[in-house]
Image (cartoon, rainbow, N blue to C red; front, side, top):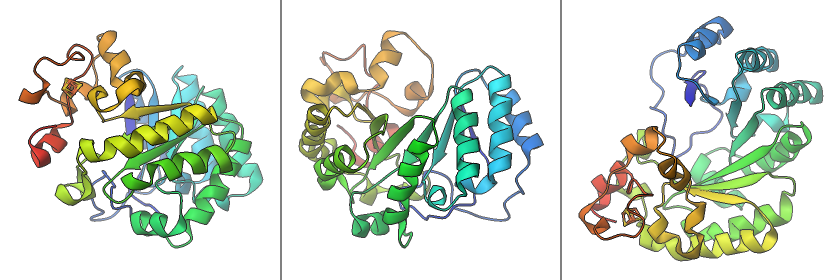
Amino acid sequence: MALIHLFRRCNQRCVFCSYPAEEGGDPAPSLKAWLKEIAAMPPGLVQLSGGEPLLAGAENLRLLLAAVKKLGRRAELQTNALAAADLPAADLAAIGKALAAARGYFNVNFPAATPALDLKITRARGGFRRRTAGVRRLIAAGAPVRLTHVITAQNYKQLPAFAAFVARELPGVAWVQFSYIKGIGRAAGKKHLPRYAAVRPPLLEALEICRRGGLRCEVDHIPPCFLGEFFRLNVDIVKMREGRAGPHLQEKARVPACGGCRFLKLCPGPRKDYIAVHKTL
Ligand code: SF4
């Protein structure tokens, strides 16, 4: 898996952004530089990130995705979907077609089910309305759409409302990932990281709503011991079972409270930034 930050430029200022705060100038978009960087990366899925990748311009993205396909690699195009609400239909269709050809998918950061909460988290005025419209247009653009719902101290109590919103308002979404916040970048520190024990009840309710609504979902960065009967939705389990290397091993560590756990072989433990804040599970 290879993550490339195309640039820092973004049309949101999310409180949970894990990319370092903007400082200094941002290099101009350069297809040549991006391709050089990708060619030097480890094999596997190419994750195109930013900033906001849709601000790179449709032709740049189309060429970049075509190059990823030519390398025989798959692509994930990460976006907050705001720009997708306004892009010309032909541009969006070209991006969707190139992404589908690279066996890829859109990965949309969708943090709230109401305009007020969306604004509080993303600090983008009108963001909720534009994001909802953008996701509908991305679905129509032809590549699968995954929603990533980053769980933070600001939104975890609304997890069931979010699951119900997606099931009701966004048919066509391929799957949802509930991903506990990474306590790095602008999100470093205690105030953004709720305890797993507090997240557990609303998360289990949300997962049950997804199950009843036929909405595929998965969970990242919350250990299986907090997922009850949904423990198989934890994305690390498959990686651990297959003995895969990857960031899950570097970013996480077991704590003394893990002793005797039935998932010990299938779970690398909580994130290290979580341990730094809460000391234990
Ligand atoms: S190893 Fe630790 S964090 Fe992982 S499931 Fe077991 S107790 Fe939870």
